[in-house]
Image 1 (cartoon, rainbow, N blue to C red):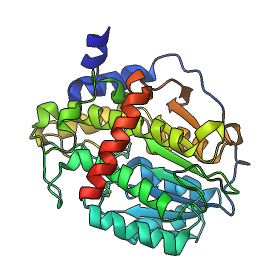
Image 2 (image 1 turned 90 degrees about the horizontal axis):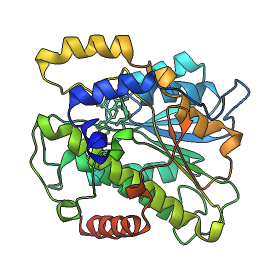
Image 3 (image 1 turned 90 degrees about the vertical axis):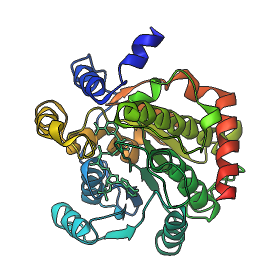
Image 4 (image 1 turned 135 degrees about the horizontal axis):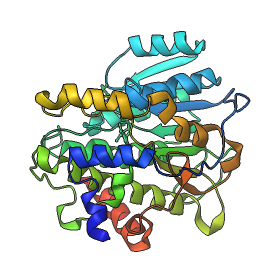
Length: 333
Ligand SMILES: NC(=O)c1ccc[n+]([C@@H]2O[C@H](COP(=O)([O-])OP(=O)(O)OC[C@H]3O[C@@H](n4cnc5c(N)ncnc54)[C@H](OP(=O)(O)O)[C@@H]3O)[C@@H](O)[C@H]2O)c1
């Protein structure tokens, strides 16, 4: 059983097949989103919004009336202009960030605090699948930083600098309960364990191991999401909702670094079998806007189905250890 689970996301081919097969499984949607679910008066920050899922999410939240802040590496200002045009909402803003560079994250956290606090909904979406290991400006590994560690640094810095109002890691309570939403992946179930000895260490890998690393970083991200919820909501006093989700297979640019020879085939498979970014954005929009999840401390969706996260991500000791190791690494950087 455990071996089967690990096989499902072992390489890009099997991960693609798994994604397609998941779409044909019986769905039990947790709820629906209607046009009357609005975000007027709310500030929604979404990153990785220049492409794929994040771009579709930006259009949708802007269409529902949110002040929309697109935190992007590229596409400034063209993607923001497109979101304004497609949503009919002029209250759309763009900030530049490179999530592989911790200095760039510090800068954007200050800009968010001074220009857009208090944030009501933060959607942490940016992600990459590099075809091989690459060093970041701080000498860490890019997929580890973009898909996990940048999110730890970004979210904890925003909490500490007051971007979510009165929210704090000591469990103080604000008037409004903000929502923090992480775009994870079902591949977080793939690794048999967290590789603590390699944490933060530059480990070279090639395209063959890319999906394995991807799943491991999504496991770190999901474990962090659970632990963040524990720390923000002690003693069942809910101060902040933390949500995580897998959007299922999305016809996006995520496979942009796959070998050139496979790209025409992959594009065809993505177009034929994967969901459009707009359709795939449903769980993100549900968590952003739905009254059904108001005040909840934690929830996880796969497509629109409620699921438990993997037991490794739920594990209390894993959460504590990950938090401590991530904090220590953040201080060192
Ligand atoms: N596609 C799928 O089938 C699938 C399935 C499960 C989960 N997901 C997750 O969904 C999320 C969105 O991915 P997607 O499918 O929409 O892929 P995508 O089209 O490639 O979008 C990825 C976004 O992340 C941004 N990004 C990448 N590296 C960055 C960096 N260093 N700094 C700042 N932004 C960076 C990209 O910016 P640029 O445009 O500047 O490169 C882009 O906006 C990811 O977390 C992914 O893991 C995707």
